[in-house]
Length: 378
Image (cartoon, rainbow, N blue to C red; front, side, top):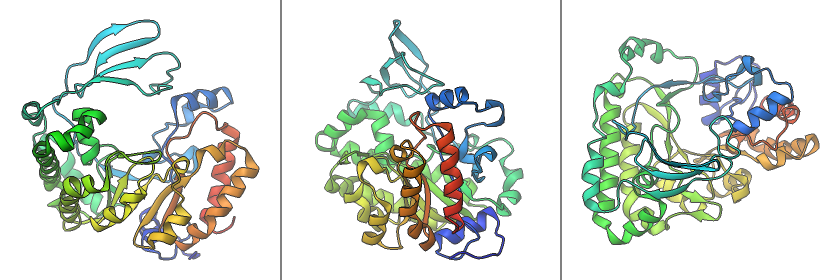
């Protein structure tokens, strides 16, 4: 798989996805918890030399650059933030999406909380509520930066991987509907309000397509779009395969077909947890890759490759828990992944953001040893 020919970042990425030879596999990571950053600063990291937006690269950790076409698919306008109650331990507030939270203040670092919030209410509780939410999702050209047309030629000649929209912008069906209704509300809605669920799924497809059309009409060769779903927990999806196939799959297929017929080469799907019972359905919808392959949920990339073959590219799959166990365990873990790295169609990353159990010294060691594996020199 490895070649001595020097490739651009973009060609390197595309060759890995196409199972072609590369000088090395891309070094990509996602980011770190706020608590991790604070630990690393205490352990000697000069924060003036890092930015922790690893989506666009990070020289300090040899993380490769990527470029994102900035399209805004979010709610507009947002709800006005409202603080309802605050104590020394917690606060209750309405956020920009209209969701009322109870959030623990203790242990928060750089915006990262130590535990999940308690969600008290959501903006859509019954079908008539959705009429008001739809007014906040209108496909207008001001969802692009003012100077976007001047960047088209540069995007067409980009030498790093080019992605449509920043992370957590191109939201999928379960994610978006959960934002509107909450996990519990949506779980009931599949059965209590099936027409509403069909309407929401169709609306998400139509809205995403309409917002995407202006940029895609310029025939820019986009390497991938990441559809953020987060529809799984540790032991499986938060909805049944039959519900996914009934409500989401037809619209997902329509959306993926639109992207691929308009210059997007690959469609990635982001879901934490264990989504295995839905992988075949994702592939039937045209999904090319999944991320982050969370190991604590049993998502083993070596086993998944054997089961689903090369049509499914894999992205993630490095167990953050094992990185916290020190250098010997890091070496053992990476050795297990080397055959998959060499086969292609796999970019190893920590299976989400880097947690505070991992020391700065061990993370530097992981990056050093991973880079050796990425170039076939482990």
